[in-house]
Length: 136
Length: 253
Image (tube, rainbow over the protein chains, first blue to last red):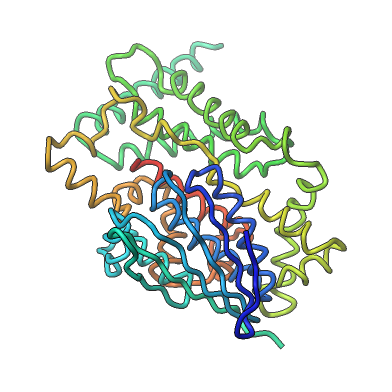
């Protein structure tokens, strides 16, 4: 794991196995990141859930790099490269029918924005942006 | 046991068997719902045996209910056994697996378990008092502890993805699952669709969990409002959302 400062933002990167056993490690890291961004409990929980769902959807094999750009009140996350597979389909089902719960709808509810970038070998990188609730 | 009690039990077993027949033969999902409701007291009774081990009783009941649902889904009508008898080891097994997977007794210090137990009401109190979802620092200050301990304790309480549901509601490969009775390529296509939308797994969730997911992801309500509506703590709502999504994903694996 590495951290460095750039453009007033703190950057934290981690390269982790996709294995389910490491999801808890990532979740704990995300909670620490969210705390640094001064997120409230609910915003922290939302960001954890978004990343957890993406990792679950990506399957349990291989590794993934996760980077966080942390600023007061916001965290930008990049996760990838990930195998496209069912993940791409799940991310496109934003207007799924009633009685379904596509990943895109979950992400829409828990982060402020998300997007997909192509990576090498037909893989993708998923971007998430989460803003914390402003506090006095 | 008196003749009257024996008679009542036999009648109840006949009713169960008829509901099982309606569910497994006719595909009547309302019969399945009735079976679940009829046997929830059994789940509660079994769950109480495992109370006081670092888990909220309600959480243990939820896990036990998964075992009940699996038992109902797997029940073979040719078996000469009551559903209660068949379900009991399933429920207990599910609860034991939950404790084993979470490993409270082995890995989590008691102080963190206790901190986690206090966290839920603290978050709700602070949310009400401050008018916003509290930060880790605010929670830590209120509990007289450090930010790091709060984060650890939150993780302790939220590590529900470790819950093993590898058997899934359909159980072993030779179990019958209505979702997997379609043939060849169509089955693969449908399965891919299912994985993308979690649709069938969503339909199989208990009503309350399904309603919580609907409020969160269709209505877009924040956890605090959902907690108010369903009468649970915000942290409990968070756990149920996380666990429901993990369960749905596991079912489609």
